[in-house]
Length: 119
Image (tube, rainbow, N blue to C red; front, side, top):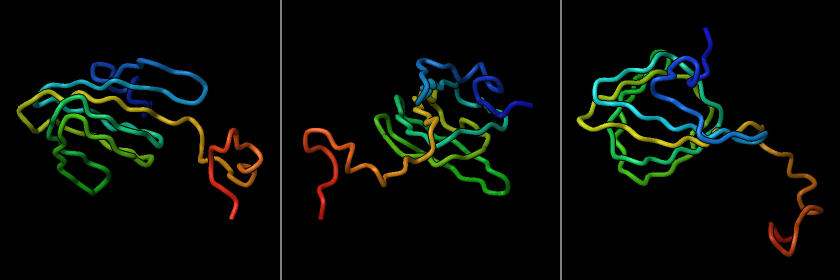
């Protein structure tokens, strides 16, 4: 069984952009819809609609309610979910394909004064 949400839940997730560094997923569902277990790498979530969901990760159950336009960082995780609200869910996920960069050489890579300044 694959834990890639696009393969395990294709009725809800679709790839809208992908390159060697990121994959952007669009997620849409209706009240009462449930996903099967799947995983996400480190991601940024942008909500296109307000929604209420129940998320289950192992023995941990959380209910979340978000407004349209919310943006947040999501660390890598596995879960399954259910739309427990009265409105459709519509979200964009920007999934990172890389691990956190090694910043040791960052100073040498600064361009035009952008980036941290030496102390």
